[in-house]
Image (cartoon, rainbow, N blue to C red; front, top):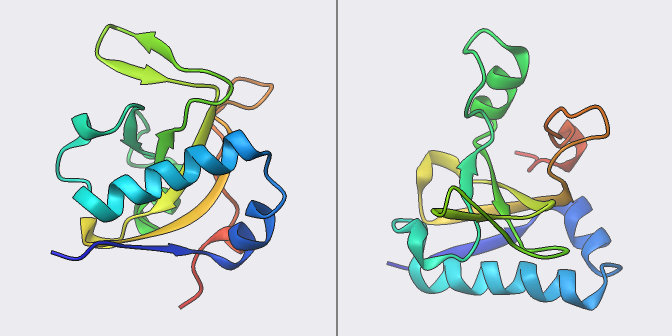
Length: 131
């Protein structure tokens, strides 16, 4: 199977200004996806999760993230931390759209996993793929 990575418009513009370690982390994830897809999360160093996990199905954020197939990957910026001995997490995550859990992903943005108030950051609509 062929796996492909697409850069959403705002992401592509902002990516050019990322510091080198952040660019490398994103490109490493993209390359690994192109080689293996997301059928086996253990191939990735950081934790991969749907952005709606642990939300109530009535929460508007749940509805938004499911509708837009939003997932996130811990990219190891500034460094990886091991949590529960099973997954590595980091303060910064890469958000991506994974429609139908298929062979294509769309990179959305990188951002702190949690905002200052402790809530999970969700990318706004202008960062998502335009149909």
